[in-house]
Length: 383
Image (cartoon, rainbow, N blue to C red):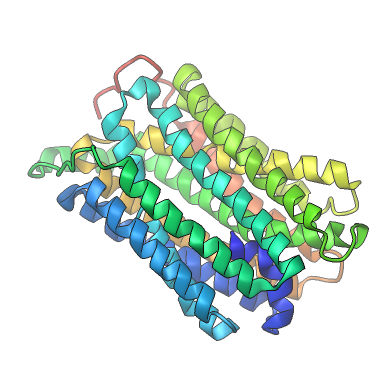
């Protein structure tokens, strides 16, 4: 989130158009998607634990490289793509490790805690970036946040030190054909595509929108504004990851997915038109948006782990990732294009509404999920 938090400053420092700014974020998402596809597939063959540790450390190296060498649009375009590739490599293996360690009745909450950790990092990243930009400049902000990935690599390595590195057994053709054709797996994959489109666009541009809407109401460089934005967007997502994963364990994946997707879509269609709201109300709106947009991430992952056989989970997540995050990678750039082409005062509204299309897709897919999807305390039905 360091780049997103620094975006208003970087647009000026690097003389970028909104389209170029969106392309840099899109390069991160594209690298993330490619990495998820490769590492998710390989995790079945070399083990999720091994892939997780490797990419934790690669993520630290690439984040430091971005902090030290990204000084223009052209440099950031490929350096941020490398950061996305490295960070994506630890995401799916982490989810697979949770699926290996926890039964279905606790899996939604377990995946929720992993994603809550991500949201906590986003809060720290945005808050630290805004504070350091106000006192120093974006270069110091980049470096400070990159050092956080080194701490993450150390903690990640320690966290999995006593977990066995499991490798999937020989593939079975009948089971492969079954999970590919499973209706739940298909709907969850398409729903994930819509989820990623909405989420990646919102993540990239919501901080900039809030700065544009609220910046003139605060003193120049006010640290409190950055902290308020971080708390609104990502502390709410932290709470959503924990509570919604557990809620899906208790009330069923479909019900929670349907509610969150519908609320997220409504937020997308209204958020960009809300810049004139009082600061407190706008931040509350942002908190609701952040809650709904990320709240279904853990539920989608937990549901997918139950919809396919364990031997094919890595491969199923790989296909889902390259499709979902691949489409999501385009969203920030599409958002920037709408901003550049829209009439003054209308760009934010139309751009966020375009993200809402993904929310509509996710809502429809959730509504079509079979009602007999796995519930808390019950084993998943045969795929």
